[in-house]
Amino acid sequence: MKGQKLYEEAKKIIPGAVQLFSKRAELFLPRLWPSYYSRAKGCRIWDLDGNSYLDFSLMGVGTAVLGYARKEVDESVIKAIRKGNLTTLNAPEEVELAKKLIELHPWAEMVRFAKTGGEAMAIAVRIARAKTGKDIVLFCGYHGWHDWYLSANLLGKDSLKEHLLEGLNPLGVPKVLAGTAFPFKYNDVETLKTLASKYKKDIACIVMESIRNVQPTKEFIDTVHEIRETLRVPLVVDEISAGFRLTVGGAHKVLGINPDIAVFGKAMSNGYPMSAVIGKSWVMDAAQETFISSTYWTERSGLVASLETINLFQKKEVHRHLISVGRRIKNIWKKSAEKYGIEIAISGIDPIANFIFNTDDPLLWKTVFTQLMLEKGFLASTLCFSSYAHRNRHIKLYKSAVEETFYEMSKKHPKEILKTEVCHKTFQRLT
Image 1 (cartoon, rainbow, N blue to C red):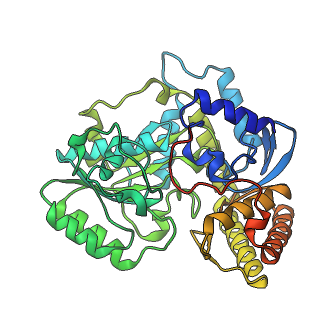
Image 2: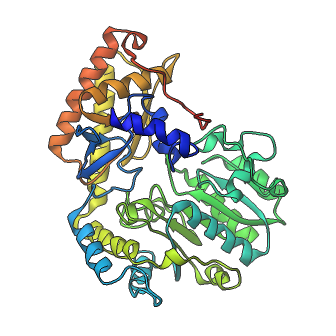
Image 3: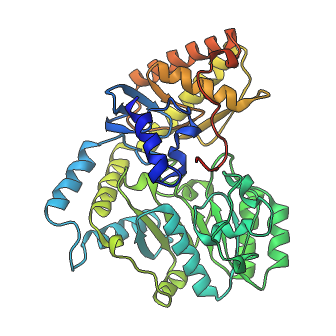
């Protein structure tokens, strides 16, 4: 396999082999995952050997919400690039996109742009700290790789374990940041109240994902709002994963969450680098008092891609399709597992569905599932990002492949089927 050969070369010259942890082959199928692509269209990817696969896994880690190489988006970007992608002057699309985001979120009054979700979250936290003059962040959920977030693990506990990833070593994060970020679980009202009471004089903001795996309770949302009002600090809602999947704009719009700042990325631009921090002027204006600036935040392609992507979201009601596809996928997993006596637990919002094997060795079962699905022409794991490119014909093929795979796993123990090592669960060294 050309992809695996190249991946082995990458391990020698790129620390960690890849730029994004989620794309490591070891998380899917060690030594057998294709790893690299030559081209992609819709929900199909071709590897370096010319093999094609239907992508029912990450779909560009949640970015290809309209599908790979969506014609309208690509043509808009190409047209803009031909006019000059980055110049001494600013791209007028900055103002157009800012207006569009405010139109979709009438509570917001100001917008800043960046290129990635992690840096956009760092910007949001910086703005909140600048406004309040305080340091401590209370947070729940996953928010990227920056120092403010990883500092939660400086106190000697794997505090981030309950927030998507475990085993994240805060090496390189200044030790003086210990005690500046404290986590609470989603819907855990008591922990949030305890932290708010204990650190109330030093809290800069409350940070939370709008939603990931479970629905928020009314008590939880009410408590977040009450603490925000009592402490007079901004509520920062991370919409990088959920945004634009449950409605056009942030998921907070349909969940009853009222943020002061909301952060977007991924689905907003269908694969082109783009992120945005929107918010109320009383807090956002503090960005003028602290230094937040970067040359490539002004490039044009991401702005144009976002405008066209949002236009298609509105025109085609893409979120409704994503929800429908996710529900169908969950149903395929449920019925196939029941049919062949395999114990699984399904969770996640419909457009970002996932399941786990309820066995004594879930990683073994996950690896074998991925292996058998790959052999049938699918990039598949226990997580699936729905895309507008997933159509009925693709879902029917996926259904047949899942049923056949579960049947095979019910007839032989996964250890008898496995052709490689078991996939990794946590962040760890590769060499």
